[in-house]
Length: 155
Image 1 (tube, rainbow, N blue to C red):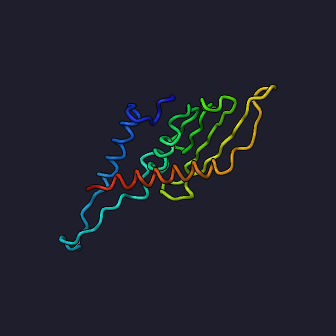
Image 2: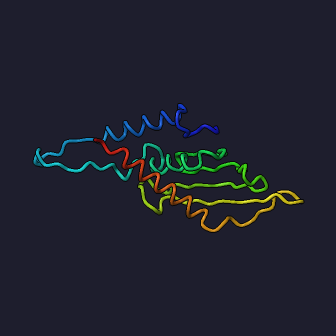
């Protein structure tokens, strides 16, 4: 389960194929328009070949790709990591939950929560998550989702 969404895995290749098919399948010719008029191509903001926005989903998986995954539900839009211990701080661990709330790429369509623990004499003890951590994760996911959308624009 730890390889879900990683580049080069069969799941990542399948996700790329599904995204490509969804984008190409949505093309159509509009009657009544001047055939010489040029309209800038725009990737759809609503892309949901799964239960949630595909850009946000893939961006979420990419953002936490270094963490072990505990639960992944693309229909419900929930990703829960297992505890992650950074080699730089072996007495600290973090667990992240990401919820994708919509099929549209919007800033309020992603929610991140995090739990942090430190190892003490009595074992792992819950401590507050550092200020800005959750907001930074949400901003990173949204930025990457926008990049994925821009990259899917044909031409």
